[in-house]
Image (cartoon, rainbow, N blue to C red; front, side, top):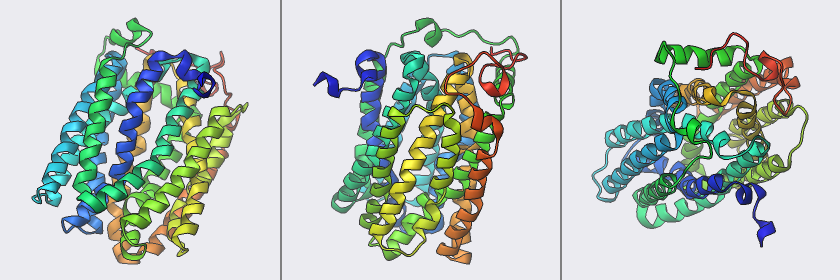
Length: 426
């Protein structure tokens, strides 16, 4: 039985505690991916309103991602995550109450999503920066792959649960369960004690304060070609490809695939592929992993054309499974590369730039997807998304620093991984 437990969970008890707490929360998040679009539609919202609500959860990333990165490099990262979970428990719980009592309107959901997104903006940089404090350098890839495995598995379990809950109790019932998962996650985080107390609880601040910290984080980004070019490619994926998943996919499902049940099958297919990708990433040993990651991103960027292909739901789900393998490989490799080559004291700031330039810009694509689809049609919009996204991913593969980045940190500077000489981390 012991051999069935991944070694990183047996050997790293603090990571195990984080892992189990986050696992249930991730399942709740995947449920909300299905429940939220149909919550908007259930109160009379349109395709544009679905995009508006998704954008409302991401706009705060533009305002607070960098603040969250600086705070996470100065203060205990697990405490920031705890507060974020409590806030998201409250917002999802209130949204559930409004929906279940029949008084919810689109504007109510938008306002609550803004608060939810603000908490998210502080959670994400802290979460990325926390992992190196909980596991040894040799376990980072395994830890990220295991986290990715849960996220992928939740794409199968979450939509299935959401489909049943939406059918039985409406979108409000699914959001109520999601709220409870944040409470469970907060309980685990409250018991977390990172293995490096000094690094986790007291971080020296810069003499120049907030702006100097931001500048030092940005220097870490621009001093590495593989980092800023990778962030650019990820931004295209988030802004161009993911609106097909969050906005146009549910709209197409509502009109042609039988609603939430059909969309759940497609998202479950993606989740199954993602599980396979995470298993591969767990065992992966590649000398230059970012080269594989860039190729995988090109495959993952085909999601829009697959959704709009006009094939049966089953065929679309199978093809989405292929893109799921690719997307999981890319993001496990990307997070591991950041945690390996970026100094721990600056990691949350660098990751906050990552979220700002990718997830933070995603509202632009979400806001435009609905109106463009209303004007051009859903399928032509999906095809155009693919024409933009795939070449952007292939361009990343053409960057020498991406193809040559080693799996392990080196002693050289800039594109090889360690801090550029002119950088003052704190």
